[in-house]
Image (cartoon, rainbow, N blue to C red; front, side, top):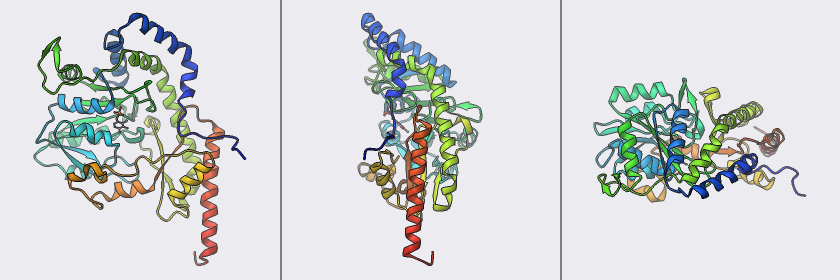
Length: 392
Ligand SMILES: *Cc1c(COP(=O)(O)O)cnc(C)c1O
């Protein structure tokens, strides 16, 4: 029998449906204006997004990975520099960093939040360390005050990977306003998504902004005069900028919806802690924008992660794993010299995490179905285990 209420992992059509007329008229306007690369619509969105995030300057680029690479380059990072980043991030953090020629220094994470462990970060600092990249993973910011204290103690600069944290807040500060630079992605499924790839670099420094403006445009500050050797072609499309600007006024409301749904999940899943199922910890309250809602399934949980995911899929409930392999164990980057055991908390996390459906518009009934299905599978398996092993 077909399930009455499928639960997709994300449903982008929900956010576009009410905006359809607005988007179509915007396409027509762009077509009439015929300015497809850069121009005033890009400058306007750069301005409003930087402003909303508490940063002075925004520079639109082709994707989040480019925002990391060009942003770090503009901050002066290059060969010989060491830059600290968490081992458990999306691979783009590493790929962007490697493009500068700098040496990545991985550190482990805090098990409760999956955010970078700043104590481990401090231990990894050497005389060559120039910067730290906190990744505001899953939509939760790394503590701005702790980051600043660390950066000041060791004369490092902070470069935020805020690709999952549009308008996230912690200690009264917004993602994108803490570092010398910050990278955002507008990949379609991010909290603020374009209809294709795009990204932005935010900074409080005019010089950094000017350099990225040049780097994204073949290294030219003046047409056909190429002064910056690391230049490339990576611009935010005018059409995408217009789409993003149309969606931006809804972002705070969408984020509130995500936060509300996460609180609901937290409450309804709380009693499964005894079975080894625990949501990651929210240390920033309503400032957490829940790009993803992630639970941990402990090794001693009566149902293992693979089976739980498979059973949920068979009931039309889609889940994800972000991410199944930490950066230091990815086949392409084994030459960095790491092996299993180097970052045990990131490694354990990668085998235990599961991302549940989370998007603005996920209904109460759908959330209820997800929770009920998990609860049934866990308690059933627990009974089965007790029957097989009466000593438990
Ligand atoms: C999405 C993402 C990126 C990269 O963004 P793209 O636009 O896909 O290049 C970088 N870091 C993190 C943490 C991300 O989630």
